[in-house]
Amino acid sequence: MRKTPPEIKLSPEELRRMQLIQLSILKEVDRICRKHSINYFLISGTLLGAVRHKGFIPWDDDLDVGFLRDDYERFCVIFAQETDSEKYFCQTWKTDPNYFWGYGKIRRLGTDYVRLGQEHMKYVRGINIDIFPFDNLPEIDKEWYRFENSNKYNLNYLLKNTSFINKQCYKQISRQAYMCLVCRKGAYSRVGKYQAKERRIRFLYSIMSLIPERFYASLLDKWAQKYNSNKNDIRCVMQFGYPEILFGIESSMFSELVEIEFERHMFMTVKEADAYLIMHYGDYMKLPPPEERIGVAPLSKIDFGNIEI
Image 1: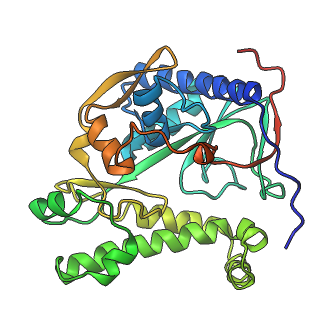
Image 2: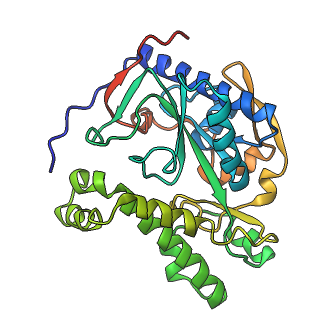
């Protein structure tokens, strides 16, 4: 294994400063989206923070924004044209030759931010927020979908319980999920071959890393968008290969957006925020135990530069 530098622990003041820089990035995203009528929505822990804390979850260290695919692609083009290129960079596998993830980031230039274990990666660095495209799943019977997807299911559940879904649909869903997952792992292989805990997993990543990561990124993009031409489809799925909610979220959830307060500013999210949060977190108003109140991204370096907040 490659020697990894020690993880740094942010002080409460440093964490708050990073959050405020992320907030400034979000405000720029919001400005451009409103100007050009591009729909976006706060998702994941960011939406949870908005509902439960009216801002960041106090210990959270990232910020997540979602787009339906067409809006995502349009946003990436317009943002690059309209933002101050000395301050912000819209990073995708298409704009940065050394970045291979299936989702994008908006980086604040003039800062530095290094994920633990990714010190050797050559992509553009900086404090950032994540932007995620949502893509269609193959069609499933609507009434069955609403009944079955009231609970979380993972890929293992699907593979063990195929009797409730027709074989053709099952093949389409499982094939898309597997291909996206394999491509995501392939794109991660340059990191995984050093950082995976088990030797056999590091070996598998080493084999996968023999194929250029941009091939995986391109293939992931293709498979994620495979069913986007199904205009009657009622679902979306995060395209970067995480089968967190395998049967997706009804696209109707993203058809009506509302403003929500986040850090004393108003941003956009889904009207059915309660349903979205229940689907992801269950009893989302209940705080986790103290030992679980940690950030999601261990760091080995952070530099705030001369950014004024």
